[in-house]
Image 1 (cartoon, each protein chain N blue to C red):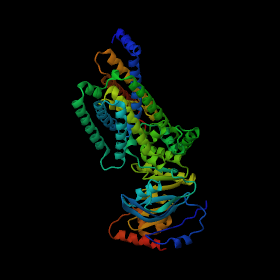
Image 2 (image 1 turned 90 degrees about the vertical axis):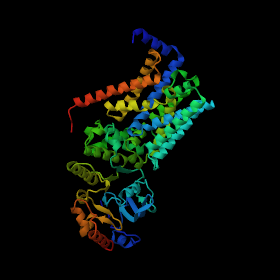
Image 3 (image 1 turned 45 degrees about the vertical axis):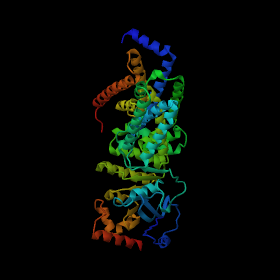
Image 4 (image 1 turned 30 degrees about the vertical axis):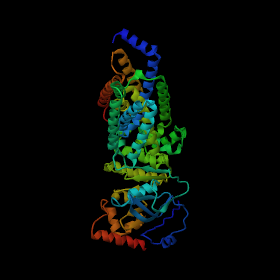
Length: 283
Length: 284
């Protein structure tokens, strides 16, 4: 990339208010997704993010067909499904991953059907792969408020989230309401998925949850450093992805962000392997 | 300390009173007392009319075959499961969330990125209420408990890189952060090599003797664990033994458990003898 195009990228980002706001939302939501992702990935339930994004797609399609405000339809639906998945997880004969698969593929199918019957392919494309630049001002403001709320709540409940993630049995036995915090994390994930889906698309939003934590875990050894590293990586990936999509004509934001995430993951994977190889074996 | 030991041996419906009268005057309130507790697992009764008590400073081993209700009893003691009948009474000062619990390790923990200090400190959470962050006192408690378990040097080490024995120490230190009184250990030596499990037993002995921490331990490793405890609760289909270790040793078939490598369930005739023997205790 030449120096000229870099100047062009910065001018575009800071010169247009709506692009700057979109980026702010993107960075915030990526960080939220990454933080929640640490707990979800470690508890082996990162597929919740994927499932919820498909449900969100169905909800957006219904909202578009009805002409209703998309976020206001998608949020309650996805939150409700998140609660349902958590409940299924707790007391059901149906195992949670198959439950998630059932719900997510059914809503994806429903969404595709509705969009095909009522809308245009542009709609479908926007829902599946996101459209940062098509966000309305009201959407952006709501997204900013929600993502800031998710971030603050995560920090306030950080220690509890650590405890239930590391050892649910111990947490329950010593009086930490494990189910409550699981539901709480699922709620925050639902909100994050719905907002993130508008930016990077229903197909790719799950990667915002899974990539940064896994990347961070390659080199970090403390939970806190994993969380911080994961958040920072998520922000870097989103900014870099956005810059690529502005600099390279017709590169979609969502796909660019995910590709940056994938590259970061490979780099950290290699770095982790080198660190482990270089260290003398202890005990 | 003047502990009073009551040997209460029960079968369904048998009265407690005679055994009680044999005991000396009770001077110490039981830390946990099970009164005629019946427990069910998925609607099947697994333990019926069980009574025993654990006093401060006791070291109780709970043994029995798979499916004898050990885990269900553990859940009930932790307050995670309500008894079908009867009641579990906690002595004064022991809150529901003040039981230090060492669960069996889960797969999630095997490669969990967390420092030893983070894990130990998370044991203090039950004293936090709605406070979002740990206080200085809580951090000091975590450090003190790490010192008790000789893991101070590992403070910043990564949990997943520790040996099995070290990990168990970390989890015991965490359990001690939740309580200063009572440790509930669920199969603590599973997966440890003989040296590491020997060390762990020494450590549990030390916590029990030097720090006066009451220990309740579920174990399959009867050969190593039984000689160390003060009391034994042997859960068995129809009969249950509860009493001091010395009394358990007097019983010929029960004593076999002490020597053999931890397999009390010899099928057939011997099992029958086992029943009789325990009934002998009941009528003592």
